[in-house]
Length: 256
Length: 187
Image (cartoon, rainbow over all chains, first blue to last red; front, side):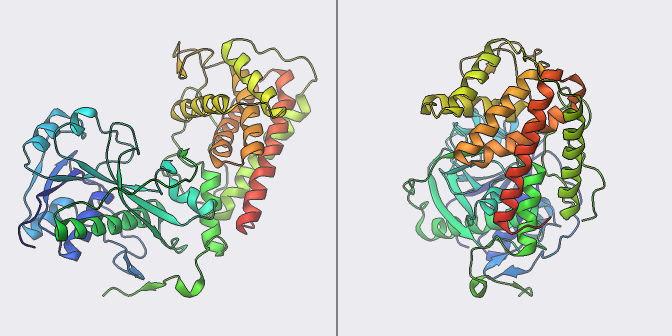
């Protein structure tokens, strides 16, 4: 990719960050800069479906650390002696990055401080759920329970959680029962929406225009109770929850 | 994906060491069966020892919960009051605790006064009524967590509250069964 907007991935070596980097690598949308904190993540056991596709949705391989992915692509990155996004070292690094956009790939539940958000570098976050209606946590399970498609909203972060301008929102077929939802499917659909935003940005030099909020009821969700989570997963097993017609629901395809 | 022999979320000192419920393990249909059996045992124990006596639960939060329950029962709840219920729900989900008194916005006035078990009974009653009224899953989600606490702490329940908790366990079972039925889940 020729010189375009300077983009940095900032986060920890989480499955999400690995999925973003692997998806960007596979799509040829690099180079990216990286700012990473918190040390290397644990060795990730391969999960069923990794590296294969559900129709057009690629299930990323999560075995390579972000360092490995950046090293093999010769993308520049810094590994900081910091434990979280709000550490002063991260703020200094972000401020001095020269990036026009930062992709946030922190740990689940990590709250980004106003200090980080005021460094002049907008932070792009992939939120599972259709905003503004589905705010909060574990919304994929609630979508399944409520008969809604699983969605991801790309938003620019603001001090109020899940309340910044939304620049893209995509819906996806529900996961097959044998694909891990918490990590693999969640990372895959976030990465897929991220790729769409990046392609637009690299093509036009700008982010997509902010979407106008719909009229759906605003609902804040909290970490799903295990009983409700089991009902959602059992519904996938029994094939009853999916409203997507069978003929349009993609089966897992061998890796290209 | 192995079966789970016992339901692990309604045991121990949950007010001292609350569950986060993050990334809970999948146990298949056996997990749901284990939950149902655990709740049935709790229900049986409470129903056997319950007494129909006047229940005393006093204080600012108790008064607020009682008023909400009355309003929810009579359709007289304003949207502003629903927002207040949601604010308390948000605080409960964050802390898994209820406090005897709060500042406006539901920040606790005293971080150590979360042991008043009758508050959890009254809050669960509000959640039952709220879910019956609005069918919004956040109320059922919080009810499941609140009843985890009440079953784990059932030895501390006043005899006058035991029948109330038993009734809420029955309501919870009905809600979960209806949701499972809607989803076609047969566990």
